[in-house]
Length: 195
Length: 195
DNA sequence: CTGTCGATGTGTACACTGCTAACATACGGA
DNA sequence: TCCGTATGTTAGCAGTGTACACATCGACAG
Image 1 (cartoon, rainbow over the protein chains, first blue to last red):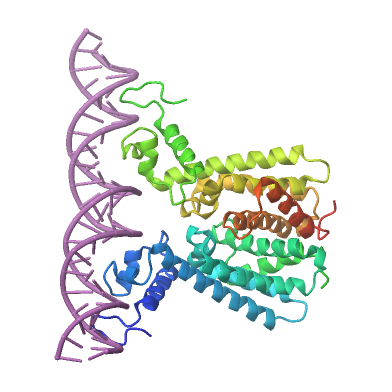
Image 2: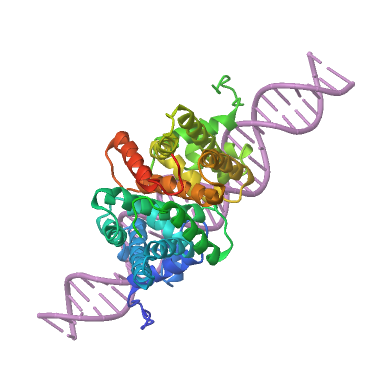
């Protein structure tokens, strides 16, 4: 959706770089993304991306923002599609599934220095947590909300991280979903939640 | 404890590399550890470490193993020093405190590819989780043990990760400990646990 | 004591990376 | 039509991981 013209000018190299970087990430080339590889994939000289991103971290930050938005959308979808009383498990499964489905991007979103203290990235990240917070606010007494909300986030995030790093090794997405359900159900057994 | 002789041979370059790498990590030079920097710090030529480690990942794996052992020791210490009934919170605080105190090493231990599918590293990592598992086994009905154990691990690990990545921003170690206590207490409010 | 050999450290070299600076081209408005 | 600016290219630097050939040391055989 970008290379309409084949001339000297690319058309929309900014977006093309993002797309190229994303496809490289999805191929999971284990080891970090190279700016030059992105340029190659976009069919452009090694330094062309610098016209659109001040440095590599800026490109990575843009990728992370894309990821945050995608994750947020999946959380919202899972929440609204869930059966009554099943929203927590559904959102947890969506969160963990996203991590497992996009390991490199997920790591980038949460582990890379470029996503810290970068206003736009922070905002996109905050938008994700607001989805969680809204769900929590609907069912938890106000006094326990902050701790409960952080706890839920930490729980699913930790689950995602451990899965990504091979500390837990279920077979396939179905087992991931079942594991997530079991863990969330156990941890939220009663605690502050009134289901 | 290594450079006893100043001659051509170093004495114990293997250990010196580890020490140099650790000190570089603790200085938190944001951005990844360079093998050449390790060699420089050890006062040795850029390729000398290759006599003791087949490649960079091997050095990193050795560092990770060191970290796993240290973390395990701190968990055990926290567990045995804790007041009756306070073991969960104490161990959680120790886990999170370790992450916050050694951010670069913690990330290396859990986020780097070199720690996946590497037998010795896996073993050291498993030794950490066994400490958690033992504590869980002491207070949770057998049926819920696996899910509960994974849930506790995910909770503290997620908390550590989120803190390291700037998603939560408490001020100083005391607030970290208090945050951890509040979150763990809330999430373990009752659930499967009989305290 | 001497010679030899393996272990350990050095030097050089290559392909790759992020990034800068100087240059080339093409698009869009005057 | 022409020119300025946005966009892309090329050359080149410093730094990286790593392979290879070489140098040096320590220990042991005779």
